[in-house]
Length: 140
Image (cartoon, rainbow, N blue to C red; front, side):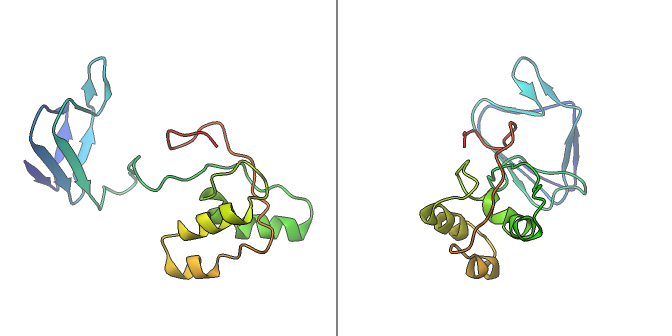
């Protein structure tokens, strides 16, 4: 099945085959008893092609480390922390200063080529500690 610009309410289930949703299809008010909410996939495949409806998000987007806010009283450290906030979100380290290898890996994860090229592994990043809630099923 293929759905475009549709509203789906009160469940979607698939046991085989595939379902593709796109162009702002909205899933709302759904439950899969004892299995969670919105969609329960026993077998088969469900895919969603962006754009999503305005104000919505998909949980399988880029896996990042959610970090605490930058809170340095020293202006230079605060500026560096803010400048490297996105880099730190891609570093799989709970250290405030990832190693050179961790920084290089984080820079390679940048999807924007300009940001990837501007990513400096030689200056301090001043990353903050990871928050308790994380978007991916891993621990820092």
